Length: 141
Image 1 (cartoon, helix red, strand yellow):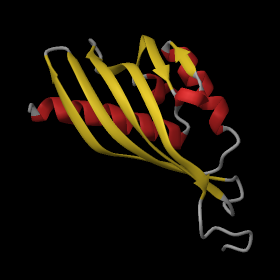
Image 2 (cartoon, helix red, strand yellow):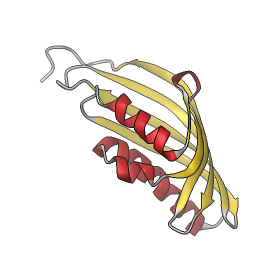
Image 3 (tube, one colour):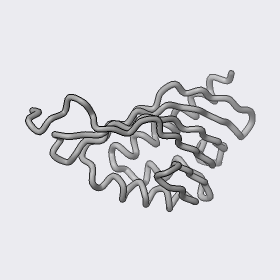
Image 4 (cartoon, helix red, strand yellow):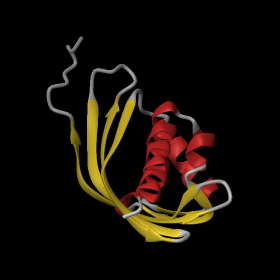
């Protein structure tokens, strides 16, 4: 396993999560190729970096703080192509911070090396769980 490849792909995945959580859509967009195919199952499917970025922006406008953790990154590849499976555990809080939802699943990504950086060319997201976050109440501090 090439540790440089693993680190480079890990950087893309962290950039993705950071872009969402900071609402930095320019940073988020750098994670995808211009002609990417992003299949999020029942949530939807988008073609192109502009389309997935616009949807993520719109989808996160109703949330307050979010925390997307990308873990268990299994990366393989050679040359200018790589694949990765990674787990996502996302906490999405209401704007008032009193209620929240946790989404858990995994990404299967095909990545390509471009002149700028590694980017996701194809993504399949599989949702494992989407539920209210236990322990949060209307009376929480």
